[in-house]
Length: 372
Image 1: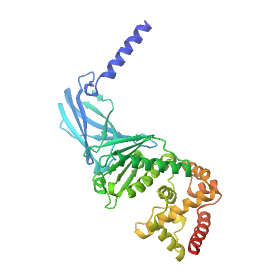
Image 2: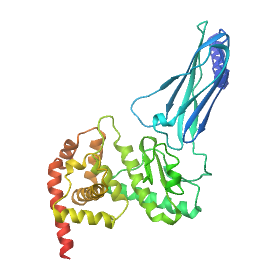
Image 3: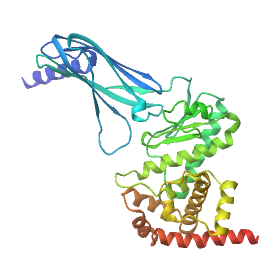
Image 4: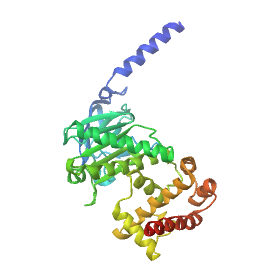
């Protein structure tokens, strides 16, 4: 008898798993007859539903969540406005203007909740829709945990960019021990204009961006500007890797550390940045480490100096104390430690102490260069 009940339960389970969410039906007659979602990149996601019942359907809600890194399952619920009826066809759109947009390749999971006048309720099984940028004919190249998507340029172009990405990750691992923990995506647009067209609120100077919570990067790289593109890939990829290994619900990295590692991954410091750093040393106008822990200035001259100093700070820590200590510092930050506390634990000095030691270090390097 137990065996027969087990077989019957298995048969019912198999039947439920093959039923489409569009065929969900309550015992009293409330039924979902169709459910779909359409992506209109980058403006909106449009969800549609059809349902019937023996009495008027009175309540329809759409629940959805985006697949991104976080520390809690966050579900949004939208109440759909409609006129109660026994047969309904409704739609509801998630306008990206309201949420700031989603990067290409994002996955949204959604399901419906319905109720009718007799008290019957139905909830559909979760479905997924991918928010792809279908304006272009993308090709892809995968190596390890990184997939590169591109639509302009030949295979050699994509392979050169992938080699750059792999080299940047190797250097970052040598300097910090940091590596990708999860799959990542890199979308290479043909130029900055195409890239900005994929965003809801782009700045006119935007050339690359890392959507760290989504493990996604998007960069506009014209084949004629590939040298800049390689530096941009190394920079944004470093942000993504460092985010993956330090994400915690308590604290972010100090900006000088996050940006310093990203600029260092690009290779030698750009001569323009070097000149700003040398000028600040010569005139005694270096920005303090405490100030560099906060977001950088919107004024271009101060921003360039901030990036240059951040590069120099990270260079000082790695050159003076080594990779193992930098890896330990990132690990301590992953635990949500404060800025001063993390530095004290790993190096034995706080940000003011770092400021003093680094100024001596960078001034000696500058004076040696001038003497040479």
